[in-house]
Amino acid sequence: MTALSPFGYSAPVDTIRNYRMFGLAIALALGGFAVDEGYQVVMWLIAAVTFCTGSVVRNPRTGALFTALMCFGSNGYLFTQKLDAASGPSICNINQVLNCDIVNSSDASMMFGLPITLYGMGFYLGLTLAAMFHEKTTPKFHQMSGLFAIINLIYSAYLAYESTVIGAVCVMCISIYVGNALLLWAALRGLKEDGVKLFDSPANAFMGTSMMSIVGSFLMVVFVGSGTWSQSQGVQIGDDIASSSGGKGEVDTTSPEFLSTLYASPKGKITLDGTEPILGNPDAPYLIVEWADYGCPHCARAASDLHDLVKEMPEVQVRFKVFPLSGLCNPGLQSEDRPDRCRAAHAVECGGQQEKFWELQHLVFVNQTHMADEDLRFMAEQAGLDMPAWDTCFADPSIMEGVRADAMAGVQAGVMGTPAMYLKGTHGDQFVEMTRGAQGVYVLIEAQKAGVTLLPPGPPIQH
Image 1: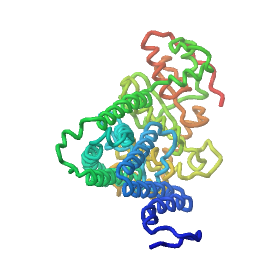
Image 2 (image 1 turned 180 degrees about the vertical axis):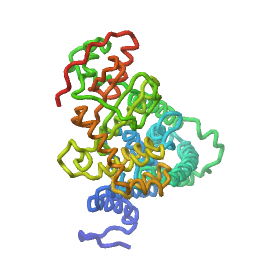
Image 3 (image 1 turned 30 degrees about the vertical axis):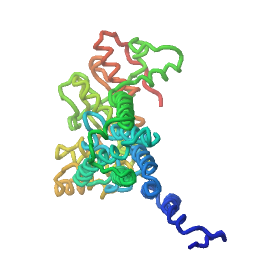
Image 4 (image 1 turned 90 degrees about the horizontal axis):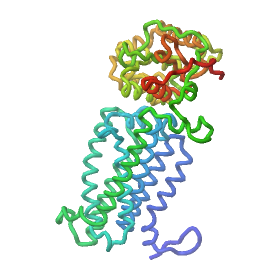
């Protein structure tokens, strides 16, 4: 029996059946260009899952290879997003429910001090490589892959439960969960073809080339990735230091001359009114005052760096002031666009009234593209606030007076952009404006603790 193709020749029905999943995958991928931005990635992930499904039908080993590669890619993207928050919101952030960043910044996204996506990258890369070996070289591949898939599915169920607790869904994560199900299906199909059962001598399945490939790749990826993660979370400025010298030779980062490039005299006076939220020990000898805007990607990264700095250096405290980049609540600006910056500041101030300032601030920074009133309220719920009290506060226009006071203090300090960071403690009671953010603070304090005599601050930074 044959079917007439649109091109005028006959194609066997079996051929159409064999390749219809691939055709559907192509159609879904192309359809992604016709939907709204945000939903594109959903369409493309569905297309990838469809392609992997078709591959499993055609050949279980090939299907496992493509599925493992898809899972590796999803883990890799989530890891890079977690690695560099300043790169902007994830492409899979659609709204407050379909939001990869909320899930990817939760406690469940970490294990033993590292992102779980790093472990996933190591495992799925090893599985991909094992699937590429000849069947004679890896005779236990399907059994090992199937047993691992069961373990991964159990862990996927736990992560899915955590997602319901968080109140958000990560579509990239879902593609990994579905990938684990496809890997189990591919393993069962492969075992059926080989005439082997999944639980036949399971211990033997974890011996041989396939397991060596997974262990080797896992250890390599975790080793390299953990170093990268530590550098991104620790407050190091290696690359910045190299670039500051124009790439000309070695830079002595302990020299007073180099250290003087990390700070300058403020343009104005730094004043505190005692209402600032405090991160760290309020009696710590080194004081950072930061002005930031909730819609600023660099401010989001600076917030993460400051939290890491305080954890690493208990002698540092941070006092926060908001500087919305909108004239609607910032007396120093003329433009009255971007009202969401003011509403976000209002929302976080209300979080502070319930001693949840930093929790709500974190969620707002993570979701900078979603700052409508309903989004802010949803984030307040996720931060565990008393919602009737928060609603009352958010409806109170007097709260904005505190926002305006912070912004005016920033104008008096000479803030020209965000984030703006000032440090006291390295030059007596004199504040200095930092040019390298939290990273520069770390280097400067470490140098002073080592006995380096710091030069007086130079003239104010010219923007």
